[in-house]
Length: 165
Image (cartoon, rainbow, N blue to C red; front, side, top):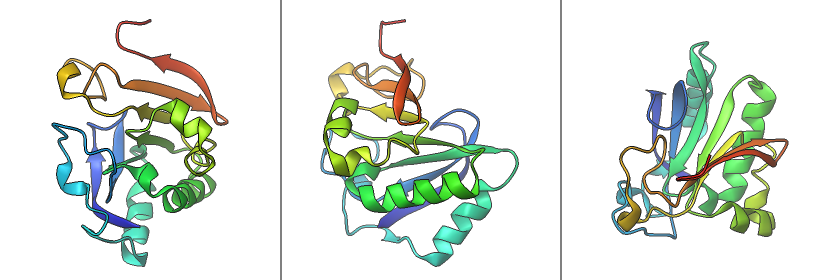
């Protein structure tokens, strides 16, 4: 897996203070994407032991609520992201895990490679960014088609969709 950055004390990509891992590589190429520089699977740098240890040390801080996987699209590297999410859940079970992806939950559930993340994710923000549906008033997402899905044991327990309560 390659990454572009690790952001500490992020408050824009999930609830509370978070660590965000910006994963390299995306196949969606959404028009108007704010992170187009992360599309290249060969971009950034390898996620080596130094970055891994730094990520875990930042995540272990008591004021950090959890980790957000973003990018690029973290589910374009499903094996590596799932392995890291599993490790985090085992070592730091009190931390929550958010995953931003252009795949929909229906696509994730239908694909064995993608769905392996579900037992470890607490929140998935799904769906491609749609520039025509851009809405800056939405919390934690960029366009009205995207949903915030809260999970428990790999199953959706709450779904937030635009215009639906």
